[in-house]
Amino acid sequence: MKVLVTVKEVAAVEDDFEISGTEIGSTYLDYDLNEWDDYAVEEGVQLAEAGDDVEVVAVTIGPERSEETIRMALAKGADRAVRVWDDAIEDVELLDVETKAQLLGAVVEEEDPDLVLSGVQANDDSFGATGVALAEELGFQWAAVVNDLDTETVLDEGVASVRRELEGGVEELTDVQLPAVLTIQTGINEPRYASLRGIRQAQSKEIAPKSLDDLGLDAGVVESSLDVTAMYEPETESDAEYIEGDAGEQAGQLADVLRDKGVVGE
Amino acid sequence: MTVLAVADHRRGALRDVSFELLTAGRELADAAGTDLHAAVVSGDTESFADDLNREGVDHVHAVEHGEEFNHDVYVQAVEALAEDLDAEFVLVPNSVNGLDYAPAVATRTGRTYVSDAIDLAHNDTLEVTREMYGSKVETTVEVADGPYVVSIRGAEWPAAEGVGDAEVSTFDVDVDEDAVGSTVNGFEEVGGGDVDIADANFLVSIGRGIEEEENLELIEALAETTGATLSSSRPIVDNGWLPKNRQVGQSGKQVTPDVYLAIGISGAVQHVAGMKGADTIIAINTDPNAPIYDIADYGIVGDLFDVVPALIEEFGGEPPSV
Ligand SMILES: Cc1cc2nc3c(=O)[nH]c(=O)nc-3n(C[C@H](O)[C@H](O)[C@H](O)COP(=O)(O)OP(=O)(O)OC[C@H]3O[C@@H](n4cnc5c(N)ncnc54)[C@H](O)[C@@H]3O)c2cc1C
Figure 1: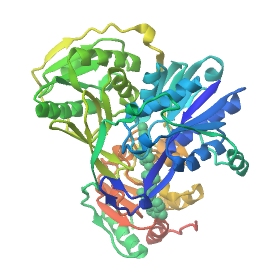
Figure 2: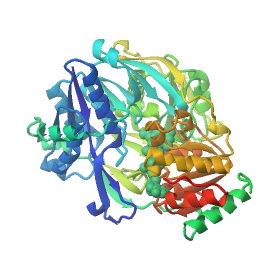
Figure 3: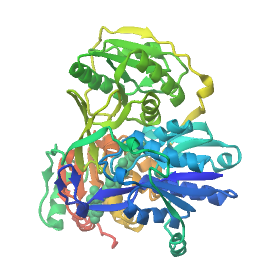
Figure 4: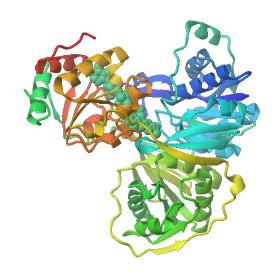
């Protein structure tokens, strides 16, 4: 069985940052593996540990810098990685969902996996769409926002028995035929920390670069229909009363507020 | 050219966001000078369709097929409706089920997809306002080529009200059952147990700012000293540090205590969905730009590891050393 895991290096902004034009300067950004993808990688690795002969391949769309992050997925147990990048992609500010589905779709067609795991969303642009669009692009089945996957049925019967986490503490129990894409929700497992041995081994694992040409795509696919025309800090809707002073003074005033509201006695 | 808004329902009831969708849809229809069509797929379509007939809706279409949401059925139904109605804009809620079918509708019908809109404008092109980086910034995204599928965030538009004079009709879709590759076998409620945080009148709620499981002791001491009930944001539960029944938010519990004290919680939209109804919201956070302050009544910009021990002492408790 082959499992493909889509991973993305995402940027988080620091507490203090500045926007220049429609971007945040890279000095204010910290890069890391997308939180949801960390769970997807772990789910893939757990399948490999439970089954015989399960290969886990991580796929990303990202510049050379992202190799550092992708290596974390390898250090946690993915067997190898594919990194899609091209000068033509570099020029695009915000890739649209269709483009991402086509780029990843070309890799899936080459790799021919039984199961694709992706994160529910990426915590930078929070589109929450790539996995399902990818499934549709490929003619795969899918399930979104999965917080439980039955290992046995997926390995032995070619059916993904999943729980989809709906709103308000309700879970939907669904069976999906393979090949399928599942978008993985946080909390489905406990992502491991990479061991020293894992980190060492990851150094010699392959990260295969793929250009548009390599994937048989022309530059037209990356033309984005999305144009970011403005980026700004949201106008604060806050009418919060700020409690100033050092920690002791803040605590003192907060205690008064709590007593005043009648939720704590003397 | 029309606007098509597709309602969300679950286990016999339309979800609130369905009516907010109608308001967003009406605004867009006005801007584009066109009609607003609402649709409901599966479930008790007759009564749902009646309920969707609110002010500003021109047509309601009911697609009868099964009871509960199935994404394969939805994709086929919405594809057929969108084609039949020449829908330039397909609007859906950015709900968990929206996440499960909207991107597929867009891909299948060659529409451009934009998710989680908090505002929409239409001049010659569609302009979508959406957040990035955990609500730290807002962006305006111009979307050049229609037709579109747009998902909207809940609680951003007011619900459509009143009784409309829409034409209500059924819409027949020949569902290709062979193309239905997923089967919904049932539902389960999770997060039960000994405590119901929804009953508490004072919640002390902890987020990822606590950093380590061992540090939870500090917040437990605060809850104990003040007689508060302990709750948390999602990562604390994901990490297994607190049970699921302590989680506040979209996929956890909705709470409306007298006081909600959010400690080291950024205020992500899915968290806020569960606690914005609290009477008084107090936030302790090191980041002065944290979105939680937008809904807070009192704000303390500071380090929880300094403020919480001091607060425990204020109430005569002994802060543990963490
Ligand atoms: C489909 C879906 C459903 C979801 N459902 C839920 C849900 O039900 N509930 C939920 O909570 N989330 C939910 N989420 C996750 C949500 O998007 C956020 O990831 C989550 O709420 C973040 O939790 P947090 O605020 O604790 O962590 P973070 O966003 O990481 O925030 C931590 C905060 O702590 C502050 N901090 C750090 N150190 C300190 C310190 N020493 N003192 C004071 N402050 C400090 C930081 O400034 C930061 O603001 C859902 C997401 C999805 C996609």
